[in-house]
Length: 176
Image 1 (tube, helix red, strand yellow):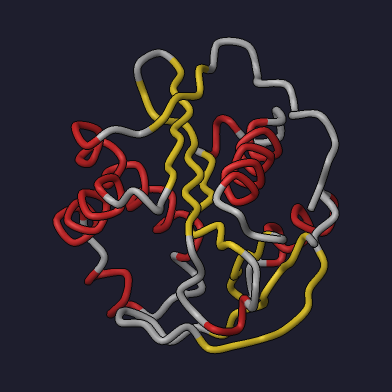
Image 2 (cartoon, rainbow, N blue to C red):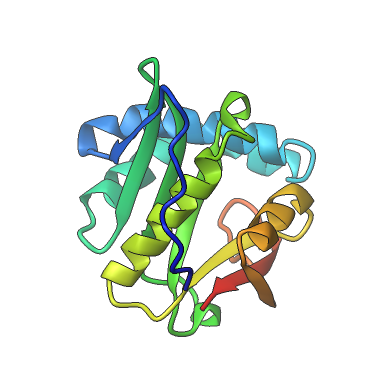
């Protein structure tokens, strides 16, 4: 796993642990960024099915799970980024912990926030005792794949996300 010092956090941004009371705001942010990112890649049925109600329930569970970590980046009272990590959901990850979500709002990209959040995700995975970090990224998401490669991630496998909303083709990126 990367051992470099943490990336600097952009001015005006605070990163803190997500709390249960943040579930609605995180769900709203997650849906907005997911639709922006995957609006041209995902099937229309997946986009229509992914709403704040669906995500809010998932985030309530994730934030209550002691095996998961979630950090949110906040600027001017709004969430502009998040990283969530925990035990792997699929055997394809092997001995690695999983970055389950890494999202940055469009207006906060290319400022170093994604790298800072990723570095914190790596720390959380290591703190949980995993020997490396893995992250699944949609095959067609070339911008994210380029970002992960620039941070030292290696594409080590492909797999199909089991859904339930979209059985997307995924690339496993690993930092060992």
